Amino acid sequence: MTLEFQTTPLQPGNGFEMPDNAGRGISLDPALRPAFVGVGNGAANIDRLFDGAGLCVTSGQQPGLFTGPLFTLYKALSAVALARAYESALGRSVVPVFWVAGDDHDFAEANHITLLSTSNEPERLELPPRAPDAPSTPLHQEALNSDIDVLIERAGALLPDTEFRAEAMAWITRHYRAGNDMATAFGDALAELLGPAGLVVFRPTHVAAKAASAQWMIKALEEAAALDERLRIRAEELETAGRSVVVSTQAGNTLVMVDGDLGRDRLIIDGRDFVTRRSDEKWTLEALRDLAASDPERLSANVLLRPVLEAALLPTLAYVAGPGELAYFPQTAPVFDTLGVTPQRFVARWSARIIEARVRKTLDRYDLTPEDLTAPEGQLEARLVQDAMPSDAVGALERLRSVVDDEFLTLVAGGKQIDQTLQKPIEHARNQMKSGLDHVEKKLISRLKQRNEVLVRQLATARNTIFPTGRPQERVFNLLQYLVKYGPDFIEQAQAHCDVWAKSLEPMPRS
Image 1 (cartoon, helix red, strand yellow):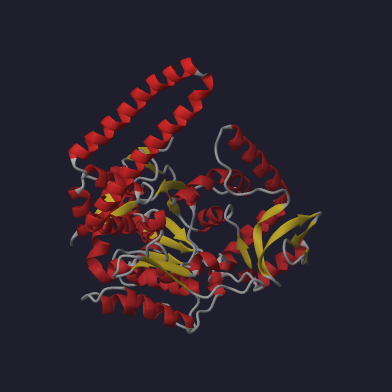
Image 2: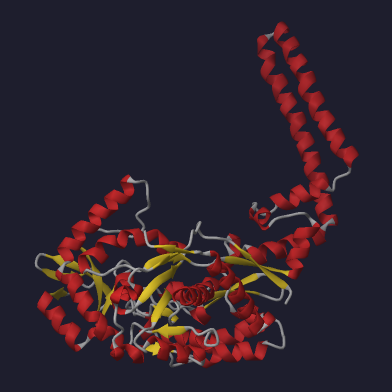
């Protein structure tokens, strides 16, 4: 396969921690089994997880269109690789589990993808946005309609006709179809794609998972005032230490959301009771306990409670995290402590950029690194074109500039002897001459650019491929374009690199 994966570490790593109490003493509730989805080896891993001794390595992400940006795949493959490393080190079953955060309600973040067209231009494909006054519906309740068929057709039109195209498009079509919801489509697509690698998908929005989670959300509400104060203190500690406070801990905010009149809404402390932030619905603690018992699907955790909830439900050794999660996890310490949950370890996921053969040729031809492509558009081209300027022309420009500077210094000195007011007009004349030389140089470079259209086109292709829209490739492009071009080998090669990454994280004792 004519591409390479260039690992781009998110942060320095010194290993994965060996647990002194494997699984943190969590016993997996058999009632949770219906909330797990697996295909092939993934289905077999569900059995291993529930055999009484099964442990897991987890990762997770909110649902995205066609499985979202590439980093979703990298998270999942990192969990697979780290689970294998733990299993080898511990000599017992360790299963990779992907937590589908279907309670998330940010449709604007989930409703689009970007693909590189056959003309090498990034193109954004997007489902119609919600109306401004629409409820903030959780993604597991966000039903797809016929708009998804239009998007799939457009994606197919953008991608090249290869031997893998039909299979890749059929995979997407099986899951992202009218009537299915965003979270189910996302989770089932991942379960099928990475079933051979043994990935298991967990749906925390399943009624079985909601029922098991409800007690922890009620506990978070019972301790809401204490958590509010402890999170405030923690934020101050982090700021004093010069660390970021990513998640706002505005006074009175609880860590629990409820599906209300305006969709998913934050519960705010209101004396001894609670009120929803946007719809102003009043709730007593007793009423919320009743809701947890009768309709737990209406309750969900915010971003600081979610990892604690996962640690309480699953025998997790480690969570494979992205940079955003790593940034806010330090804020969760008071939540783990207050709710009496032992935290799992957090490990930065594998990160990489894909360099295809044609891009590698461009980089090698012009002796460039991928980082060179981050220069403002036009700047790199100008430098490379300037390097192609005839040496005698370059020399002439340098000599002329030097002569202008030297001779005008003499002229300014002489002018000042005649009349001090002559200094500014002479300097103005000097600047005009230098500006004229700059103009000549730009004209020469412009003509060279016209004669070097191939260079400019090749750099544009390389830039659009590695840093589309000026951002890291893994945060922009969707997996589909690589499956269409390279087929299942793409997944296998990415997994092989993840396995190397995981093996480089030497087991270390718990400190």
